[in-house]
Image (cartoon, rainbow, N blue to C red; front, top):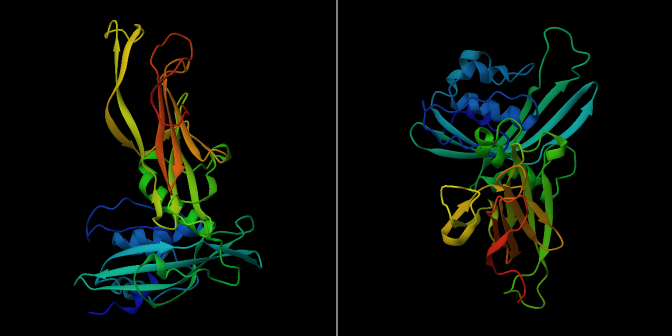
Length: 350
């Protein structure tokens, strides 16, 4: 059965995969702090079958004659998957308007699917001059049309009269949504660097692959570092990268598992006899990490205690569109001095 017209109004912002079947317990999301989060929240309500909440994201203009007609319009919609582009912003007569490019894949209860692309407009009247009742950021307009797979390619380059976003801005927006969706529970409310001191870092890497011919132009990669969390003396970061060959993806970092043998293995401050690699693992976060644009390297330095005299440090070198582990050091002495020993080194020249 074809998707009803009302389902066209259910298009949303960011990458939000509502992969759960009807009735599954999806995390609750109600965030009206920015335009993309507003649309994400709208579709979160739709996928959780919370139609009264979904209805509340509209204000002066409604998507149906009444609430009953609105909820009936989703009777045969099982789930909606959402992708958005960069949000544009305009001001007019005491209000801010936000234009959100979107694409959705709507799946019906009979298994049929349809892709749509278009634009949402969200409006926020100046909060300082509003009266009672207060009207938060809300959906004020929308327009959609049938589109083709793949879903991400169906997102318009821009909505409204503003210039289309740069490639890096559009990629950053996608990376932000991927990060927040995947790490909201792990990294907490501050995920992504809401504190200016922990702001997201964006780097463009110009490079030539070893297999490129001499006449081929330089390639570009876009690297994004997101703040995840902070302890008493360590902070963690998550990285995403976009390359022409592989597209946008999260970085995973190889790290050696090490076995430390001491004169007295029951005493962590006993002198170290031997450090050996017993295997390798993959990490999705790095501790106290730093990207060097000059060296094209990402380094990490995990302190084992606040004094910093015991630690592990890694170095990953960018080449051919990926980061490879080239050096790893361990300081296992707990002796009040910083004296790491390399357990793996493909970076230092002989």
